[in-house]
Image 1: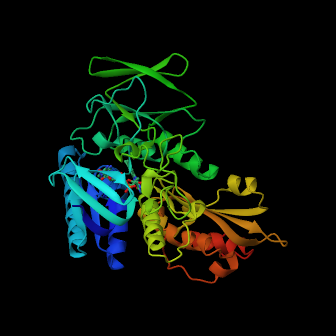
Image 2: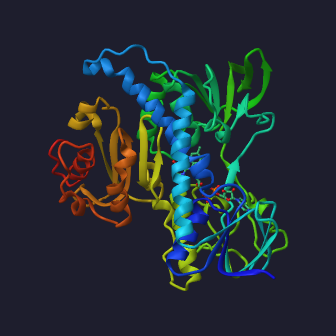
Image 3: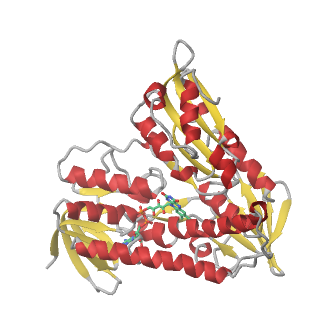
Length: 466
Ligand code: FAD
């Protein structure tokens, strides 16, 4: 006999657990199947450990600038094991909190691998709970993703690593190649370089961080180069030859680099093959993502899919939003779909990057007549006080007849703590606010967010400092 629930979820990462918490808060009886640990990639192998590593790098940079504030400190040495134990402590605390929250909402966690065994049916096996048959009025697939690999670079966890291994490693190499200059690759490159590792980025596309506004990308690239990161763009890696204390990575037109470790960061593949979907009626696209409509409904009635397993932005907060859309849809509440072109993006490398909405190029390509403004942190009091004046806020707005800015189309930031400053820009873009709407509101002084306020005021044609 199968155990019946209102909702059965496969996968306990951000997509799965957000769906479970939201559905339980709405009064549904929920079971969630997880083959590893609730929290998923984000908590155990992604967002949290990667940001903890970046924070260690921040502390190292702060120590390096201590003399500017009048402190004499000895050349710091790093016990990387201690830093990684700290990261594990943060993960354990969050994991305990999440498990407690799911328990308090009476979400049943079933340990094992779940497969779709027919409409509304999920068969679980291979975990501590043994073989379990579940039935749900609704099923949500939230199996997430795993790192992609490339031919010739077998991931062995010691010489060739992905984000899965590097976030849990206990030692730092002297040198590393990061294959892939996307957001995750650049976060690792930035942290490793600040911790004294000699880093080379190899990127196949013409520039690192593709998709970023060009002015923002330029500042990150300049900072990376200043901090000793070697960047080769427009190059393909062709293989590597282990030897000595590491390996020689071959790339481009006969070029090579000798390093201790290789970090492969070439994107993530959906874990749809773990779900037993062959012949189920749930269709996949050509890249293996589960096909969904704008309400996250799959091609099989009663089955939704959310998070990294569907072909949308692979971000934890996007998975949260999709989970809410799916649950509201199965409750018959007519939810608004996620507006993927306006979600917030944050990259936690140094300098940090944060944006929402269209870049200048994308706005022009979309046919908008635009006006833009750039305000640099170099003129911002708080940025100078904290000693981090590199970066800018750029706003892209529709151009009005008098040349001033109308509706705000995009807010792009690079610099100190911009990942914590994006909120106002995100709201402005999503509320379809005009520069006049936003310019009337105050920013605290002295604060980094004054830079956003100043940029908006400048677009009204009456800036104070710009
Ligand atoms: P996952 O988190 O992958 O969770 C899926 C879960 O399902 C896993 O726990 C898995 O064990 C389980 N599962 C899979 N198949 C089955 C099955 N058949 N049965 C039972 N269980 C199953 N995003 C951000 O928003 N901000 C960031 O700063 C950020 N940083 C990142 C840094 C790194 C290094 C990486 C790798 C990712 C980062 N991400 C970030 C992306 C983020 O981690 C993912 O978008 C998010 O985890 C996706 O959530 P999900 O629930 O779809 O999948």
